[in-house]
Image (cartoon, rainbow, N blue to C red):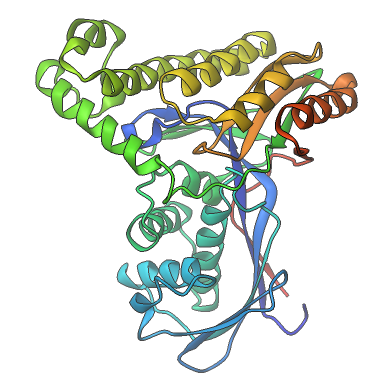
Length: 371
């Protein structure tokens, strides 16, 4: 890659716990992964952003004066949206050549889109000679996902991708963006990521519908509770006023309120190295996402059930938006190989094809290397 000037990466992520509460103002508990999107970039002295991929034959040329016009081009739209939102923030866009190399599996729930958006913005800032503010990059990337790609997401994915710290999970308050880095000390246990291999598309799925349901819940409850976001509603308040909500909206709100409490308990468990308690919380989270939030589906349920039934596994749940993607499991280290074999066989018997397991470390978010 010596023909390029810089190598810029941004991480995929797992969310240990705290699902579908980032856009409700809750605290979440993600960690950045060594699975990442890498952008090799050099300035080219033109008004074009020329994009190639290591995994595709496609080549795309974006006019830096028309970045708002590429929403429907397919490959290249994430990069166009990222550059466009960065320009709207008042940053200079420099014509360049970029080669994109993504090791975050697409449709996995590990935030390949956030990794692409964050790394693209960080790369553009780098060749423009700008100092990178990771939080600003994350916020611009979130705008790209929401306003350009049409997924009404919270901030968790982009923040984790940009601001991750090796060896640490992030206890992120999605309302204030206050973040505490918590060392991941799993002791005799490993975190295992498994992909159900069912592609998912958050725009076409019911992700935006779920967000609308939580907003409906807040619109009813805020007058009664004074809550500024749904995550501020307490379990007592929900019990008192839940009858004012439609049954499906109540179920969504109940998940949010209880998931916020699970995040609080998971923080304590992680800091104490109590993996048994953390495993129980993962199992409870998956059950809530299945029964109350209804975002799992037969594939993720089969994968989580297979994991939870293995003797070396303390707990397992879906991670990400749902409707496909991955599970995260806490597994005794000396049982990991048998766990992977067992889960693969049990899942294939239930669904008809195999899952994939990933070996990934908890890594830094944005990295920049001069080539």
